[in-house]
Length: 378
Image 1 (cartoon, rainbow, N blue to C red):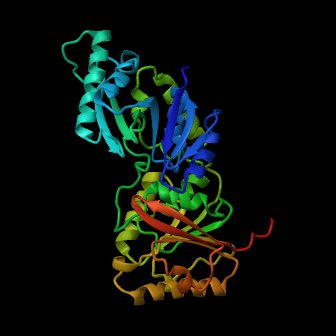
Image 2 (cartoon, rainbow, N blue to C red):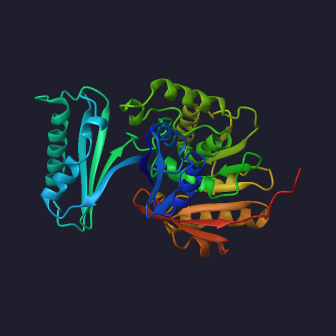
Image 3 (cartoon, helix red, strand yellow):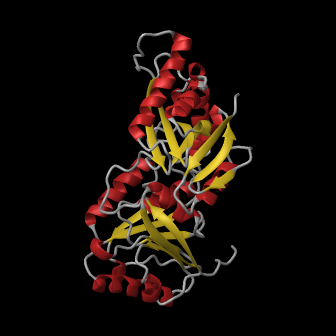
């Protein structure tokens, strides 16, 4: 099968995680840039990447990259692509654009020129007066950066954070992809206890269970690339069957999710059921001062409320005091806290083992990691 230059987009700070995930999917060399991870893949591997990547945002095929300081250069660069091989007659193609630090700064004009060149080239293959756009969706992106044009084909459709299980949300939710990153960056595995005391709609606990059970994150949804010209629908079904067969249904997980908000607990239970992990998570409606799992050597991963989300600094202090008390009372646990509150380490009373800068959408957050001891070998 033909190989394409592909890229997986990712939030800043997690590119290395996406690279590790891709190493299990493709055999090509993988290169990292800011917010992007490049690799070579055929259409089957592109589909597998969409199905299995937990921490990436989207997967694109790079169709072309060329200098474009004028609209004529942009037109000729797009015209040179073999659009008749890429798009079928009934393709529902659409062009989106972005521009930064380029002479071609008008996004609407760049989109218009790109679509005109695309149609002119399609006319050489199909000689049609108009295109019905009744078939599969093809989202094409024209990106201008420092006078370099990049033409991308979006293979994901909806963003990869849309797993299909989030039926209900609460205020200020974490994205599914960031929650998966938090789990990946922790010491959690299926043999350890996990607890999120501010679970909200349950995203961290759900992502932890899906990883522990080896449930492909895209198993409950579909991707645009499934319907691309050249994709074998029978192979898509076979790859999905393989993913179902790879699920670990035997392990006994110990995952706890608590929150003082009853609405959050209801949302978490519904989302966990939709994700197929509702029997793995023990949901408890309780404040952090009133509940903690009894097991030792657990892993706490949480996004505590702060600032405007709960109202006052006094409330913050109560939360941090409770976390600090737990850490002092049971030093076997590991603590992982993601927050935009830069005063957290001082309030927690300990210097983190490591701090990572991450992004929840466009919001910068810090991930404070406090490593506890390894559990004794069984």
